[in-house]
Length: 335
Image (tube, rainbow, N blue to C red; front, side, top):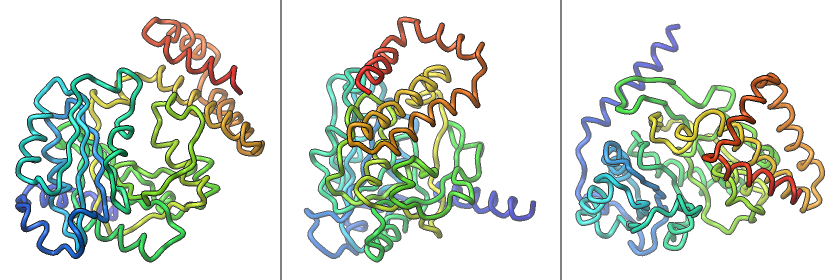
């Protein structure tokens, strides 16, 4: 219990310290940089949609980073209906050499297009660090530590660290560490291909290379899972980097995953694994294809009674979820 209290104290202290930090100006951020400003070592990739209440913290977490190398912030606003875009523009004006923003005039996610389709066109860093507009980093040395690690560990294609889950306004800690101690380790490429471990997206830094494409990956909203599998297929490992203060994951009703509801999450779970099973089937990797099919059946058997499955089926036929049904049918027909 004493250890738990100490961890909680550390997290509370980190949040308080973050709140008390003042933003450096552009010259202060760049004064320690070695190298060409137009050739950033790291691209910070951020997606925002109706994050008016949170985007200040996200941008602050990026701009407090102390590095020896140039970095850029590539942020995509998907036609927010609140003041998110206006806030980003304010920062973009103040940090024109660091922030590169994309503003959509129509919401692209509703059309089936993902933010990375647009960000990847302008991201040029050797490494990519990820954080959505409703999450934030608390450690000013995060980027430097992860770059140093990747530079000295060529077998690692992606690194991650610990994170804390809080409520919408960060006044309550929901989970002191979303990365359980048994997940604080390195993962082989085979383990990544099987989706093992929990690597919080807001803590990622990965090598910016061309990764193998997964067939129909765009049909899943779990793009993060597809990225990890793709890194595994490329032969890369995923490594845990200690001694980085926890990033902060914000749980709120406006999140993409929480918005769709538990029943729809079941459908997406199945759909994602069907896509992966079919991909490996086409690649003649029967071991992994069978692995993902087994994951589906085991998940259903262990977590849902017959009555629950009937309820989910009834829920799915609702017109609002027809798109999920179509995805699953397509997956089954192509398998």
